[in-house]
Length: 296
Picture 1 (cartoon, rainbow, N blue to C red):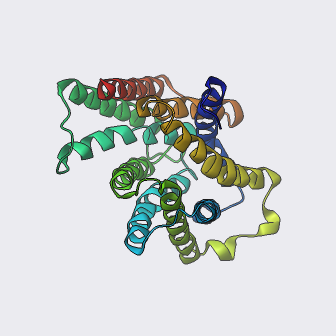
Picture 2 (picture 1 turned 90 degrees about the vertical axis):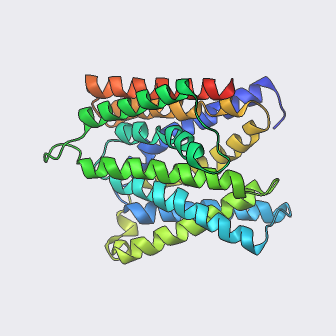
Picture 3 (picture 1 turned 45 degrees about the vertical axis):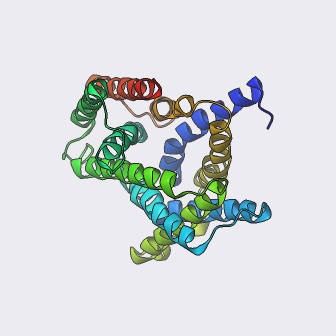
């Protein structure tokens, strides 16, 4: 794509709408496809396509980089995406999106304690505290251990998934060779997908899975996750990073939960209580503040 305003606007629309819709797509696909098989197959196909593109462009990497990319794949796609699909069997898509919106908090905190990391100032610490307070409100409004509610264990898993993604993101930024991002991501997706498929086999998902019982809706959701959510949105994201400020690109982290909440309400009939809505607004406002202060 050319670096024009319409192209940039189209790329932003892709990362906002496509990634925001992945939570709904996961919820729909889970009706017919078990969680680890769903995310594993998606990652393997997407990773294969990216590796093919890297090979055609002669953008291959050496053996140590394969190992580093595989480690990142475990953190990103097993530790986060696998947990997301597993928890979304019981958790609403909107709640899952809000909890994963805490990823920038964990990135800031991890970066502060790592050697050579950037220490947050008082404003950033205040924003982090406000964001974590928002998470607490979301948990209060969306989690309980009653049969009709969301178990706190699933919420804890999603927060752990956000932390795993943050660690994988930091390592990817440090380990990904320049001009080899597509190959690095393809390896990460493939490695993570392979482990997810093995976990699914271990849990008996293959024995319980019936291809003929997959609905058209679930099949369409899988195609959406694989081609639009993995390949198209990733390509738009990488391209945008070279065209505009990374801080502007990072606005997807608070737009996506809003899209997910809206789609969950409109399509799945998910309800959002006042406490949960206040918590979501506090989380999103904190993310916006962190991005602004980081840019300054």
